[in-house]
Amino acid sequence: MNFTRWSARLPGTQRQRRLAPRAVRRPPEAPAPAGAVPAARDEHGEPSAPGTAGAGQGAGRGLDDLPVRDLLGQVPALVALVHGPDHRIAFVNDAYAAAFGPREPGAPAREALPELTELGLLPLMDQVLRSGRPRTVKSRRVEGRDGGIPGAVGGGTRPGYYTFTCTPVDLKGPGSRRGVLVFAAEVTDQVEVAERLRVSERRQREAAVTLQRSLLPQQLEQPDDLRVAATYRPGGTDAAVGGDWYDVITLGAGRTALVIGDVMGRGVRAAAVMGQLRTAVRAYARLDLPPHEVLQLLDGLAAEIDPNQIATCLYAIHDPNEGRLAYASAGHLPILVRDPDGTVHRTDESTGPPLGTGGWLHTSASVPFGEGSAAVLYTDGLVERRDADIDQGIEVLEEAFAGATGNPQVVCDRLLRAMGITAEHDDDVALLALQHPVRTGHDAELFHNAALDLLGGVEAAPRARAFASGVLTSWRFPRELHDLGVLAASELVANSLQHGTPPMCLRLRRTDRRLIVEVTDGDDHLPRRRRAEPVDESGRGISIVATIASAWGSRRTPGGGKAVWCEFALPETVSRRPARTGRNTA
Image (cartoon, rainbow, N blue to C red; front, side, top):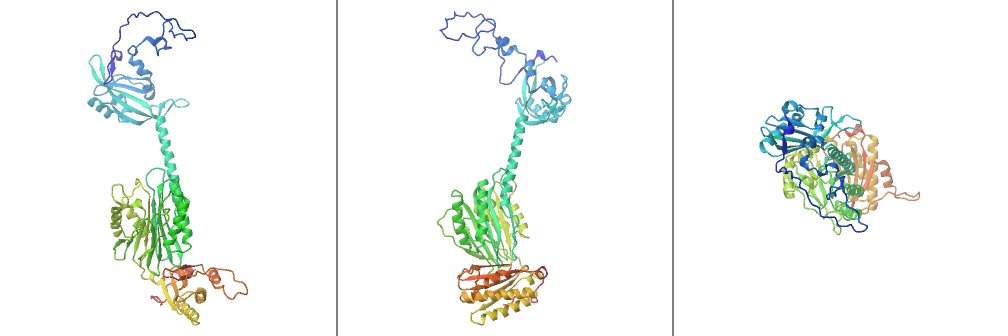
């Protein structure tokens, strides 16, 4: 086809008519004022029109004087012009030929332009012919005939990306018909920049999530009487992580602290505040304080760390001797407790405002938590949705928890699926599940309790030694561990008789991993280990206990008074050996 006989017109535009040159009489030039710069003149000595100075030889030519073929042939973009229903080639410019090779005019595009088929443009071109409207596809990868597009460093070609625009055109000439102008602008640099940005954001998010996870427990402590599992899911796809955290802390004497919290906001600052609060909770937990006192200390610390940050926190303590879960909440969501009969209920509402607000006295509460019970602690990301009230989310969680069976890790996974938590979820989620399993058979033989009430007097210490000796013998402990347990019981009872007040109680407890000796009395003065002088007649009991035991400690009891305890780790040969009798000794 003879392309020079055609002209192209885009929809919505009209060709400009050439204006016939006319002679224009110019008025005589006024003399230039002194110091003025003379007007610019073209090469023929004529004054240049405004905006055309230095235009060269083509300054007097209009746009219509330039052939379309020359214009499209010189642009760096890829240009192809096709016509007819089978998109026969009318023209390809030099850039197109350099990228894909020369093309024979008149050949159908499906055969002569296979690259358009690979790029999926032929169906798009059909739509353009039918609708008369332009269509665009963005950032299509172009390999080119030599594996890329021209212009690579060192010669040759390199892979690149183009944005293709298919525009309907009217082709005038013999047998006027409609065609499609395919115009491809290179966007390789933009695509590469966007890809580098995505990679950078992904790395930043991975670093932020790694930081967040490094501030969380790498491995949960596993108490003797509870089974626990936790999970953390970062929300969204941006680099900002939240301040959700959880922790499990063994307090000694079989008691366990369970913590979950959420620092408001997102980003490294929220994660840093979370890390400081979690460290502080572990430090305060070592004091073995009631839950509300721990939150009271945290409240003051949170205001010191960052007055502009507010955090919620729930701190709970499980005591297997009492079979209850004591807790205090600072603006956090309620615990969900499932009773042995399968009934799920919430704990009472928050017992105090969020941390960092100050000026509030927190209080503790408790719920029964015996064998067969289970509970979940969670952050708002699990139940809060933009289109629903948070109470509705908690109700959905209650229903899911009622039917979630299996070990704690399985329960966590099922609750996440039931609440629709996916990788695209827009908020962080922390979830802590715990169970107090019902022990039967051989496992039940490894857990025993024995208690003796002491009224004081000179016969209390001998009675305590005899009781401890009999109980430890029935539990089939080796002689060395038996003697250490009796000695610890004797020293703790003697300390209580000297410094405490009635009522007193000696409690022995065996788990599958340790022996626990505990003495309670009515005085709230906590003992401390000190160095006894050679002439002192007392003050060595706690030092003896601390020396022979694996761990020891003391705490105030809720009803007034104190408890002093110590524990011994069981050897492997003893930890799985059941006692002689299957019932607890009282």
